[in-house]
Length: 314
Image (tube, rainbow, N blue to C red; front, side, top):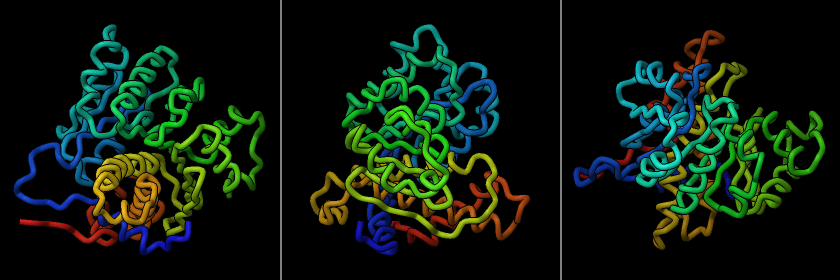
């Protein structure tokens, strides 16, 4: 895609909702996160709190019963619903999801096959509602069983790291990627997008590669060499906001994205990748190798303000 970095950031900035006193709670985003099990409670917290701090109004975390109390203890601002392993998930989960603007599936989810039904229900509910679905981390294990769940759905966004992308590629094409292909998967990324059809895929790595099968964006902003766990959760949490905001802007004929004729989720992904790298760099400058994802989240206000000028209307 022949759009330079600065123009991409201007386009991303244009979709961020203005703040004014006529807004009601929820207008800037009701975002859901499916993830969290007994072993992994940090990932859904990092993802969901990043979305909330970035400007969504209400954030819901749907987790297993064993993960609920730890996640609730991390923040009173998150709405934590222990429903994934409940007996009535098939009827209760869709009721919660129908009011959301976007859904992230995967952070801290684990690979317990007993959760398959809940994941399938969640994807179908959001797809039937024509809303963005972001598939991250362990959700790719479940979707990899049946890519028809998201086939030809243009509001599906996959966010694998290099190893996860290699697994997806092997499922689809029957071979492992070489080390060189994992580091720069341009052709392979296009193949995956076209095979599944219409989806947007963000391959996280030394450089982040973003494609919808038609265009390619590469985010190579400076971050740091620190690779602590949780950075991908910050990325997908912020991407959920930008995905919702971008899709809303695309529906307005006068919006910049609409006039440019660009895929809103490509812009959203580039914005989230750039923001995550900025947080990484700012936190590393302060803490060096002692930096953790919690330090990166504290830098969200500074990173966001430097990349996207604050917007306020009275």
